[in-house]
Image (cartoon, rainbow, N blue to C red):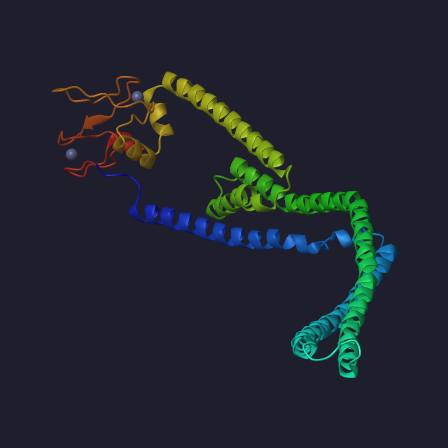
Length: 350
Ligand SMILES: [Zn+2]
Ligand SMILES: [Zn+2]
């Protein structure tokens, strides 16, 4: 069945939706940037800022000095350990050689009186003494190192204590910063949503509605989707509360409109057909007839096998009649007869 809406009108409707969606996309992009950049308005807070700076600085300086001193000792220790290794090797080799030599020697002479034996024994003792000396210097270095480690762990404890003392102040500052940043975001997105609500309530019939529709789509998206990653822990409450509020308002208006519509319908159904016909525009009637709905009462058009359905069975409105000139059956809302082109008398005044 032919629809009453002019073809370009439908194309315009689609184009206007495209305008709405494109505009919404741009606004959403802009909103995304603004919301994303908002934290930069605030300085980033670090825990360090809340630690008492003078004692912390003293601890840091001492720790650095300890690290430097320990590094120097470690270097010396490394060298001393190498020296010890060499001394041990030398004395081991010396002992072995001496033992081999003395075994060969004891067979012939008394070792107690032999000057060569005495000389060799002295050499060997010298080697042992070297080994002991190196070991002693290693022990000394180790002794120097141990208190450094103790002092370091003491200082680290102090540092940790200072940091944990700073924790409450830091957490408080973080909380207020979060609140400020979230408040700023809310100060931008919530008014957007309110303006969108006002547009829906008051401006739907405006010529510029397609643009406003774009704004409405964007506002809803920005508030309910783009805000999400930036919400503090309690932000969800605000989002859901606003969502519930909006849904209740929308539901309230829907119920109110439904009541108003039904009341109006009942009122018009009391009126004479001529009057009611005037309330329905030509295009509207075409659209409703195409959807098999009575233009007078919005109820489905009843049909029965073998009978022409000329009137609405609910409200009695004439749906189909015959041309006054050629008697062709036609829709009652046709302005002209589709067969002979005579103007319909009821349409002439409309
Ligand atoms: Zn009807
Ligand atoms: Zn006709």
